[in-house]
Amino acid sequence: MGALVVIGNFDGVHRGHREVLEGAVLEAETLGLEPRLLTFSPHPAAVLGRRPPALLTNQRRKRELVQRVSPRIQFDEERFDLAYAAQSPEEFARRLRDSHEARRVVVGKNFRFGKGREGDFERLVELGAALGFSARYESIRGDARGAWSSTRARAAIAAGDLEEVLAVLGRPHALSGTVVRGKQLGRTLGFPTCNLANVAEAPVPFGVYAVTVDQVTHERARALGRGAMSVGTNPTTDGDSSVKVEVYLLDLDLDLYGAELRVHVLERLRGEERFDSLEALVQQMHDDVARARAITSKCQPDPQTSAFG
Image (cartoon, rainbow, N blue to C red; front, side, top):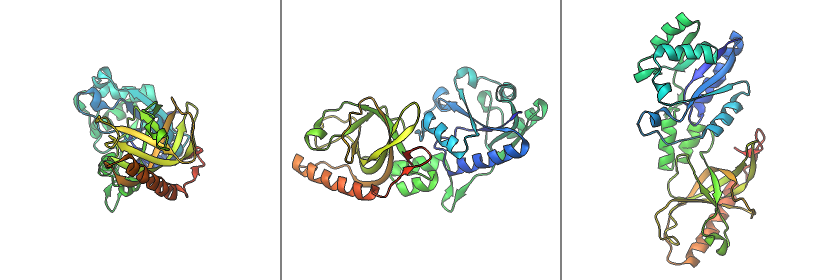
């Protein structure tokens, strides 16, 4: 049958990515090909000795978001290592044909490939003509503020501009991690929290946020609840500078140790503060929770995944 192969990192699967994938699915159907996405893990920069950009979506989430564009898209993930990076442009193109059954290849205009980034779009066209596939590039998509890009989304997250994040991603940014045992102080204060470890996604600025929360298993993600999230060093109660991500679930007190949670960041309630007493902190926590409850009261689970979007 052959495949139409879209190549890219697709971190965040933002609005521009989704338009590209939607167009690829329609084009593949017209050409009688299978739509595929070829992406890489880990990020090539990490392997080549450069600092990789902050992560918007882990591979599991990326796959899920791609499948939500169309379940017809086959998700091809190549392990990017030094051997992969050492391929010549000719070897890379032959791999597209033989391993990914490429008959049509779609890339960004500035796509580079092969050892030392030697190959460019014109070289891909030449190699494709010799190997039996054609290639085209996608134009940049965006809005009045600029191109939809992973870089733009990362900058908005770092600045705490959640409206801009929503404009680029088309959904809130999410943090995911595993629930681990903390100091149990929140429980003694009347606010038991889920302490998240191994959070890989781009961090939001320190502060308190209104959130919705999914529980993620090997089979699926399901809506768990709504809540408030604190990100920071807990200057009122902790004497160390380590960053904590803690989530308080509204109206739920479950044993979630070891569970993987995905936390959708909806609105920033306030920045991180140091309080003069535990009493003042608890009063502020009551206020934070009340505001989080009001903000999330209209959120509904996403029917596509039984999870909050």
